[in-house]
Image (cartoon, rainbow, N blue to C red; front, side, top):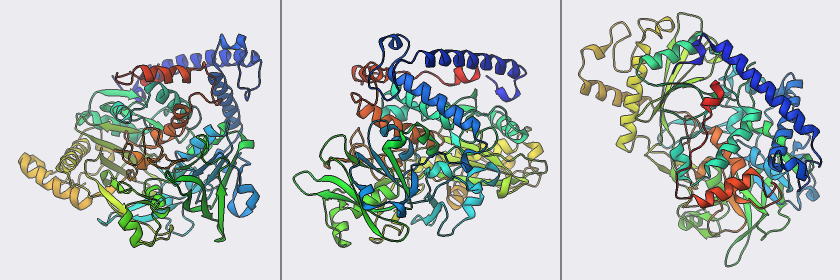
Length: 612
């Protein structure tokens, strides 16, 4: 294989793809003319069912509406189209009654989840941060990095330190991490999907639902990204997997939530799928605790939150006790276990020591916290570098992911090469520092506690050095660039050192230079805190759906899977509801999954389609 970025036939392939898109547009227009019933109808006409299911009809039409909107708006980020987003201070007590679902956190998972549920149910989203729309430091790729320097009280990022002293950040903005990250969009590895017991068919559908609005493969790479990509191949990270969303060992170009003009498309853009009459999104609404009615099995009936003025408010479910009435925590891997503890669900002795009434003694809450250790090198460039976040990645066979960005406010004449340890195997825990939800809990990740993680880091840094020493990278580094194993590009110590000496040096480097790429996860693991449907075990009407349920971080970057999961969790958990037609492909996927739970089901490949 070879990169489409240097393919002499790329323009021919592009024309072929455009022809297929045109054929799809013709098909879509024909379908629209044949619609015999409104979108909200729970039934399809017989004539139309011969073409498509109701779910497919809904997705196609809503995608068409989304396409028309995005193409007519000069800047999605500066023109939010969603009238149902408002400040929490503006709502009355009567506005907080009778919701089928209350979602805590309008982030990477909460936004697609709310959009999906609102097609049938009344949904309230409580987001502790502000809107991402209208903030150029969020919306524009050339300003990426400015957010990281913002440590003010209104920053979309909240800084915290792990007990190891590693500086970290968590999002506090609508759209969550997708509003502040580097934009990488890449699917989870198949082993992750299998380990969670997810239905591959529904996973594939859910990814595609997300991608129709917020993700795309770049049309072309700039000079630095082309060189970096070639350097990975020259460093031996093969094969060349071209451009794909799929997680494959080798070198590839992956997707991005930045569009071709450099505008960010956060997860909150997926609200284009929402039913505006069924959803309300409140900003600066910080949830303090989940409310429970006591009994043999505690039942959730609402939440308590504070608005920006500090007023304590309560929001209530419409039918507590019914299956289709829930509070769903999508607050992230730090806040979700923290909120469970503040609400009385967690290690009993710890909660009692903080004066919290114990609803359920649940020792597993806050356990198995993990953060992927990473190493980042700043490489000044003698040549011009374009402004870019990571667009290509080397996925090694031993578990290291190598990426690079360039230019922008971080350094106009510099490149930034990083490696991330997959997994990881090392884990820590989270517990409350105080009972104030605004205070960060105490978090330990125990970086490199497991020898396996250190060995992966050593291999990744070694691969970075080989890439820097390659001919492809030569135009973008100085000869006196220092190397982690010692020496410089012109005189690398590795030339005269044994493999053991190099490994020892790199091991010390990994330990001293460890940083984070903000992919922390755990604290509410599947089969330990939540069941396979992400319902909190032993608690009625309460779910957790975010990175806290993950045992490892999926793929090179988790955001694609987090957005997918926001869609997937509902279409899998509620397969017989009126959200989707009973004969839709969603139902077929669900039935197929029940028939083949013990079998491996192959997901259709995206990269073959994208490159065509």
